Image (cartoon, rainbow, N blue to C red; front, side, top):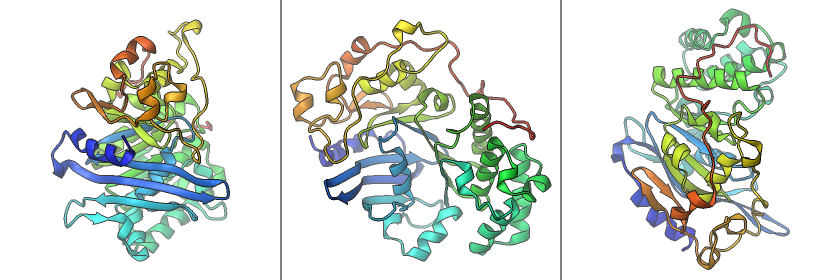
Length: 371
């Protein structure tokens, strides 16, 4: 089955009412034409993102996660070629196809309605501008009321356990890694967007600060009715607060489902291998392993199931055909012909210290110096 045919099958994954969908991604693909061939770094991806959910996008580095995020905002850099449909369902008004917007319309959509926090807080700030200057520049660029928005900024910073006047009047390099990341989150929310996309926002922080940031995000989502797309290579880190998890491999989604269900009953061999490779205090060393082999070259993606060269249960059908999504359980789908055999083939244990939303309650210190 081709990825185009997979898209038809994907329609059966929808388990909620249409009015719950805020972003509808259909056949989104990105390619870069190079001397050695065409690199397909997003491969006809289909996904519905629901209003007010926290969706975790998980996969190894180079699996297509960041490209998926860029595609949502039509922010794929040249010479990348983005095709497909990205339908945004506003609370009021007709749905819009983001990929059909004029440049000025797209500029208004970003920050106003869909905002993004990129990986690496330091590189997102202009080192010659104060933190206050970044907020004022964004507010001014979108024609919002400066007084009203700056009042909102102070409230956001306080909710993120930062002292507003102190933080606003310093330069980015004067803040610690954790403080910069929280200031960047506040900047992304300054115009009250409906959707917040976060691309590896905690990658450069230590574990304690990562958990603190996740706790704050969870609280912000509840307070502001945000839809959050959280992109990470660290599956257990986001599992405790995500409503759903979507696992990417080779520029496609291979497993989608409720977070707890996937953690406890992963059905795709790749997802199970990811969980087995996660370091855990409770897991004996001889039961931990890395995933054998390498991720596919985007110029030379294997035919059939792209995971088959690394999969312990692959058969001839996996080499010849691209699997459709099979229903594992209610709200749980896996693109694997042999998903029923995966549990026996790739065993993993769940840490008794598994992260949950209730566990992630550490409040960052304004004076922290992590990161």
